[in-house]
Amino acid sequence: MIANLRLAVVALVLLLTTLALLPVQLAAIACRWRLAAFLPFLWQRVARSVAGIRVHVVGTPVRERPLFLLSNHQSWSDITVLGSVLPLSFIAKSEVKSWPIFGWLAILQRTVFVERAARGATGRQTDAIASRLNAGDVMVLFAEGTTSDGNEVLPFKTALVGAAQAALKDSDEEAVLVQPVAIAYTHANGVPLGRAGRPLCAWPGDVTLGPHLKRFLKEGAIDVTVAFGEPIRVSATSNRKIVARDCEVAVRRMLAASLAGNRQAPIA
View (cartoon, rainbow, N blue to C red):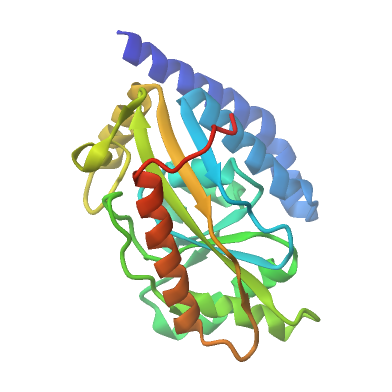
């Protein structure tokens, strides 16, 4: 009964928040106001709070721009976790655009949609990401290309990492900063999740979204650590495969440290 009441409260708060911010965000996107980058951040902060997600930040997001974040990916909740730490936009597979509710929210988050299987479209897609980087937007790439089980990091894909170099073509900048980010779900209601318990938060493979979403929200208190690594300066002569590999190594190391208990006080 309490769990179902909690779900109702979460749904109501997010609905009211969305209705309040929607017209302003649509206008901000249409007019290209910088406010369009901040309102999704505000929405995600509300979502994080009402969902009971406590975010612990290790390290610091780079202030310099252009900034391209390469992160591991475990769950739909990664969007709220990262999106509540700083204003940013995501790169997502094109199918997400057609998902009920989530697709609309992704559009309002100013997501760049890509077709990962369309190899011939890579150049066009990297240019679209590069344009956003040059406009000052922080872009997030879930470099594994899919979600993991939360206990490990899958190999990073390299194709879209080239967007960092593409951003230099139409910019006066000498380099783009690429920063590795590791997301680790560590506790539920104060109890360590452990390897067997981490599927509560992770959403890998063919797990059905609806039941997973309900089970996650019913918990009421999830701790997640977001670790920011040392940024890599990517120039026109950098090798994107080496950059992706170095970020993957850093994310693996930070994930292992977070799961072992290296975290700081929550930011909210």
